Image (cartoon, rainbow, N blue to C red; front, side):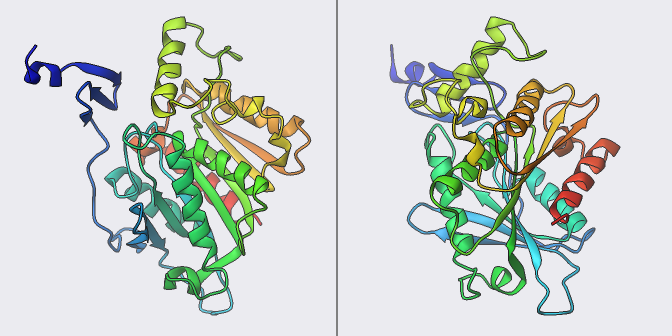
Length: 321
């Protein structure tokens, strides 16, 4: 077999996101477009990009709402956002996430840090977790008002920090909250709550009305092993939090679990809600369901009424201290 034909041999296909070939080449099929930071004409939200770690290339896009307090002693909540994309595609710089953060920041009137963690398979898990934790440490470095980023120094109330994410990003949010509990928190930062939108959680056995088709389940399990080769499988607490005996130590006091009726991961979101409510965790967990919608529908149909309802619900949560 010549080298050109070898380069076309598939090692792994992760539809509809990417293909990896046996020669190591990775072909991303979507989620690679980017847009620059800007001042959004419809919301007035300003954004800019920052480099957090020159060593790893970890970066983020920051968002500042148009309505800043006139009283300099009054600061705004901070939203640290982790994008979805199966751990293999997308970034804070994509048109999809840039548009969503502009809308959410404007609606909730918060400052936001949208984290550009490194992607699998070039950087398999736990790299995304490590990058996401490093981003939180960077946020915490501003709590004394002398960090490297003026927007955080000048405008953020570090007693009102929230984490949020969709799909794989929601998985990251959960794991950051668990790590915060284990490591004694993030210095100078009070992580008040987390928003879990259509969380990428799974397990080896079906729950509720979850799909029971062995082939369909195996596809999700293969995808998890692809992004996290060192994982023990789909009962690993990283992807199946209900199996974590330490769940009651979750490192925030409020959680909003958002699910969509037609999402394959819906039952896992409900299970997470029930597990938090019954494990002895001392916080408050809320549940919000979007009827007749699928996985991360709000990103692809941002102008539909259900998307607006979801953004409003998240905004209310971020401002109910």
